[in-house]
Length: 361
Image (cartoon, rainbow, N blue to C red):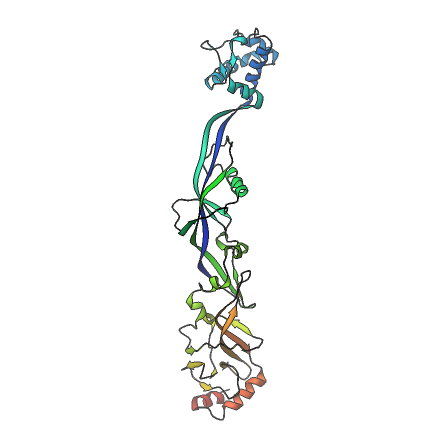
């Protein structure tokens, strides 16, 4: 059986600024690149050939002339070509067309460098989730300066893989290092799932809310930090169970189950109890015989019964350092012989209601 609950665990968050300079690239379409190479070739050949001659040389059909002329005007408008006439025609000598510096880059690389830009964004890094997010007014406490908490390579990879997240042009290319600066560490409360494994008598941290449990020890989280945040109801007997417990420090060395107090049920039957540990108004009930080492037992019939101990038990959280004590109910089944011996013992000094219950077995 497992028992899950959510706690709000204080954890570190790093606030920082990510920055880097970039340029926007203008990439050539297939037609743009072809037209630039036509002009480049024509000028290299002396500049006397006409546009129509070059079209034939590059196997462009005559009916593509309007597309070629419109494309050349577009390249001029975008700063890749320069010429004095209003527009070129099929008879324009290519020598009258100049290739600009941006146009030269387009010819060599199929793109040209456009305007400069700069990324400047206030960010958060959550170490327990290995996750970045924009700082949109996130509330944390105890902000203080730190250094080296942001991994430069991981941050660079995050930016380069998330252009859309930062509103960057897909054609932007960073020309300076992507850096973090003004790092500050704060504390926030992270929802964390805690699971108690009754079979193993151990607590585990779940992976809900993107938690990476293996990261917790490196963040200084220990068993005490987690167990101290469990809801109070986990470590106390439910209010509808008619017992009051004085939790004991001594833990018996027995093979038994370990039950959280919240899951303790008294059940129906004869209650045999240690008056120094347990107070109860349940009936039928009888004080435990001298020499019995349990705090309480419940006998349902001659074949079924359980005994219990109410102790301060040392527990741990898997993967975390340290141990701490919590209230725990130890539970153990009774054999038929043990039940028979107990009933024979209490029958000699029991009250009428207990005698009546024994008679009904």
